[in-house]
Image (cartoon, rainbow, N blue to C red; front, side, top):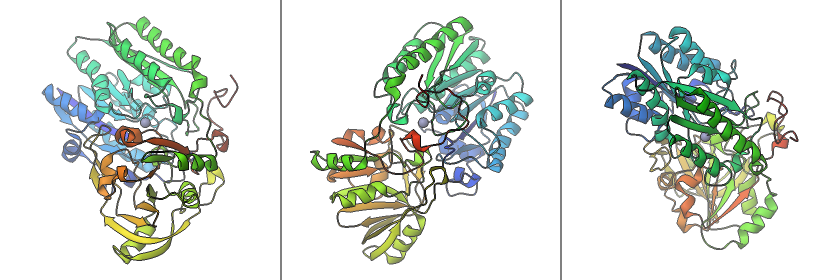
Length: 491
Ligand SMILES: [Zn+2]
C-alpha cells in the first residue's frame, strides 16, 4: 500500500499587510520540509500529520511525504508559493498511490484563488479521479463546497485552543484506511449557516461552542457516524464562504450524515447571539487591571494576534500599560527584527533608547504603523528556538528568530524577529521569564494562550488595541462575504 501524506496549512487574513511568500512556510530555511526531512520533523508530534505518519507505519504502508508546509497566518498567499506546494503534492499523487492524507488548515486564500484547499483537491481529483482522500482541517476552516465534493473523509479540530490536532488526524484518516480494507464506505454531508462567529467567543472551553463540540463528539459515538465536525470559521477573510459550516461523515448512510450535519448547524444558528463579542474600551481595561488581585493577570492584546494574521508589532496596549504605570510586567511580544538587531549591537546589559514596533502600515484599516519609543536595559538575547511542551502542537519546533528582552524598569518587553503566538510555557522559558513571578503578563493572543498558560492566570483583561485581527468588525470593510450574514446584517 502506497500512501501520499502532506501538509499545506495557512489561515489567510485578507485584511493583513503581512506578505506570504514561500519563505514564510520555510521557517528560516530555504524551503519547507520535504521528503525524509519532513517525516523526521513531524514523526512523534501532536499534529494531524504526526497521526498520519503513525497510522501509515502501523498499516505497513509505503509513505510518500512530498512536503510539510505551514506558515503563521498572514495576507494572501503568493501564487508562486501555492503553486510550489500544491505542485509537489499533485506530482506525488500522479506517481500513483492508494490514498492521500492531507493536513490542511482550510482557510487559504491565494493571490488567484479564494479557496486554496479546494483548488488543491480539485487538481488532485484531476490526476486521480478515484483515489480516496482524507482531509484534516483546523476548526477555523472556511469551507467551500469544493472540499466537500473532493474529499472522501474530512474532519476538523473539536477544540479551541487546538489541543486535538493528532486526534483529528486519526478521525480524518481512519475512514480512508477502513475504505481501503473494504470495512467501511464513507459518505459525507456538508452545510453552512450564514454567520460569522466572533473569534473571541469561539473557544470550546466556553458556551456556546462548548456544547456544540460536545454534541459533535457524542454523535461520533453513534453507530455509523465516522466523524462529526462543526467549524467556527475564520471571519477575517473577506471571501464568500467565510463563517460557520459543518461536515459529518458516516458509513454509507447519507441520510444520517445529513441529519447530523443539519443538527450541528441548527444548534449554532439558534445560539448565534452568544457568538457576538463586544469589546470594551482600553481605558476601562487598564482601570480593571489595576484593581485585580493575584498574579499574574493576563492582559490580552487580542487585536494583534499573529496567529490570526496580526502584524504583531502594534504597541497600543503596551503604551497604555506604561501610561497606567503597570509594573512587574512582561509583554510577549513585539515583532521587530530591526530593534532586535540594535539591542544585539548594544549587547546584554547595554542601555538603549529606540523605537519599537509600528513598522507595518495597515491599509485595510487606513492606519500607518506607529512605533513606540522605549528606553531600557538589554536583559537577554537568545536564538529564539524552542519546542512546545504541549498540550497544543506538542513537540513542534517553534522559531521566533533572534529575540531580545528589553527591561524598561516596569516591563520586560520581549522583542522577536519572527512572529510567534505565545501559547506554550516553553516560549517564556526560552527568554528566561517566569510568568508566575510577574504581576502582569501581556500576551498577543486571543484563545490559544489558554492551552499552555491558562492555568497560570489569576485574572484576564481583554484589551482592545490596534491590529488587523481587530475584534471590532465595523473597522473592516467586507465586500465579498456572502450577504446577508450574521451579525453584519440583522437576521
Ligand atoms: Zn485555528
